[in-house]
Length: 225
Image 1 (cartoon, rainbow, N blue to C red):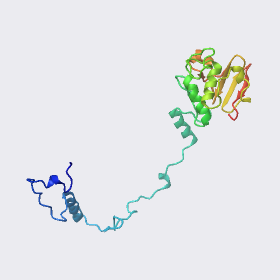
Image 2 (image 1 turned 60 degrees about the vertical axis):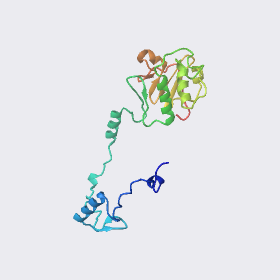
Image 3 (image 1 turned 135 degrees about the horizontal axis):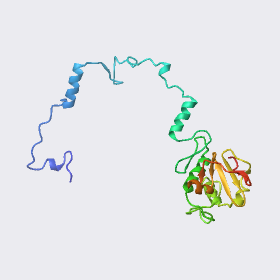
Image 4 (image 1 turned 90 degrees about the horizontal axis):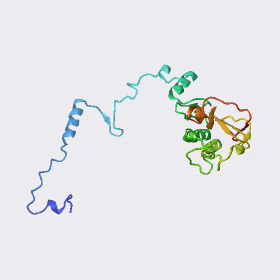
């Protein structure tokens, strides 16, 4: 049994009598130091608020001038900060030295999701039919690459071939995503950055900063984008 206040262990036969109790009201050492400090620096204290009666909250306050307040930054300063951060502004994505895309701050969530999914397979090799039997594959062809990115963003529930993508969505270019498709090939631009399996032999990534000819391709875009 563990000993406690008033337990049998404390009153057992032969136990030493408890030490003499300290005088009631005698403060411990740290309280004595506090009392001495108050004697040296006496101040009246409001017992309700616990604040010295002569306390003036404005006594040491400095006058705030408009010049001391944070000033709005100019557009040029904001752009310079974004450039240092590596995050593009506006609606133009950028590509890193290792072939990954960086979405602009202004891109909608669905566009950012497409870019993030594209990054996952950007440097995987090309294989005809790759990515059409299963979403997770070791290689992807052109249409499966785009289907993968769209499916990750919730826009597709199955892989489409390039001929299907030539009739998918809405006609014409989109604001954020534009698809170029025909019966033999498909590529797209996302926030101004090209996503194209043909880029693998150029830089080792599907993301390309350089444009290519769109002659012979049908132009489509996801509805609303």
